[in-house]
Image (cartoon, rainbow, N blue to C red):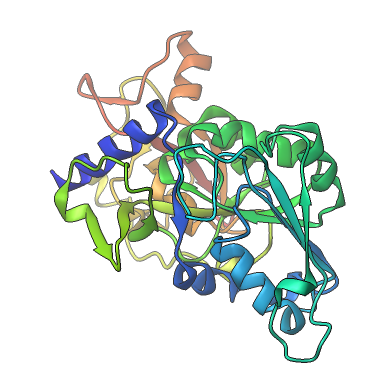
Length: 331
């Protein structure tokens, strides 16, 4: 029931375009520690962040010297004020540029940060924001949930490295899954579980257990939050340890009614001895090692290509939840 409430909260955020989720510093630190070698002499762009309160800006400005950054740029949409969550009162969007410590105290002081007014509204699709994007080597942010596909498409169009936050269900989007299959995007390290986000006071959360207030600030917890990236990490090259076998246990792996593949209910149950196509849960992608497995496709797309009809895989005429079709590479 609680998982259903989480999904409902996500759908509500998307339908209402209520995307003001601010990532906690602890979650940023837990993920970013796996990519330190990627940032030396790089320009980092956080283009969906109010730099005055963004924890992404906080992280990179305080880590500027230790990471060896060249420049940090952050922009914010004009509806965000210094009180963190105004109700779209600000008339100007801004961007900040930080090029490191100048006075030797290793703290990003106000006089060291360049604040520039934008002519437009600071939206990542605005031409001003695109010109800043062109300067960047790596984009790191928490983009609007409702615009995730469009946001990723822009990063791919401009050939940018990135590390961004999204929901697990984004993996099932046709456009995103195509990029996963082509090894143009993969998941980060600290995925799944529940993460807390700062939200505006007016944000309506139906599930009481998903709300907390600390020093007057409202927080909202969301499950199945993933990092999406095209920066390499060690986890991506770790094999999934397999211990189960198909032969002798065929009844545990039924074949789909509408596609020639066996069903595997858990990633841990992937058989080590089956050469054919296997349908596995989308959580597989978080453990995917492209040297161990080949991704064939995702259920709805494969069924549509085969039959002309959009459908999930079926077992005994009953649809099952999203499946990724994979094959072993080494047997």
